[in-house]
Length: 237
Image (tube, rainbow, N blue to C red):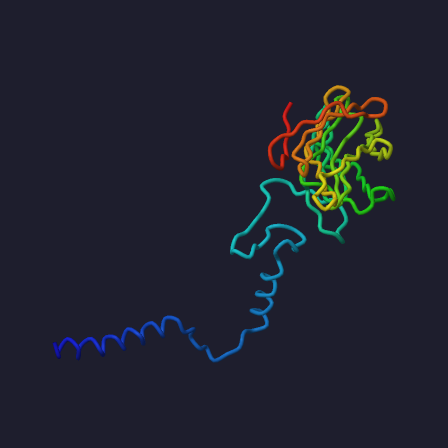
């Protein structure tokens, strides 16, 4: 028993010394060089800020698009391509980002035109919702969903001209009201998916847990409204 104690005590301290050596960084006796500092600074600031891919992510992964990269929008703000819709003739791709619509040639990738809805005073302060953009069956109009995160929830309309230009149609805007809380305060309706079928438009209201059908003729009256599951985003007809 005495031999066991005499043997275990030195062994215990030897293990502690080994563990301390494993956790302690070796001392090199020098400070990082300027090149090393620059490399570290580049890595720390490269995520989502590089002018072109590949991008170094903070979890030691590199992200690079598989195909061609097309840039659009204002470089002074944070842009995200949220949703897109191909025109019925397959020639134009309408891309919905946070603050604008971009229209691209579907074959060449050329940027044909852009539309910033905030250029109209009525629609300032609105940002695109996470999904929701579609063309009319004849390819003459585009509809998409925007919101201000509070009480303004709107589906906007733009006209696509034969000359390949986009024009906002302010009078075509559809307004939606969110649910009311017990204190009387209204929540955002958060329109998402929009689909046009014939002379009607279907809108998913994520914040209301509803799908609404409205007529696109005349005063654009509501045809029906249905309760669905919690926080819907998509719609298929």
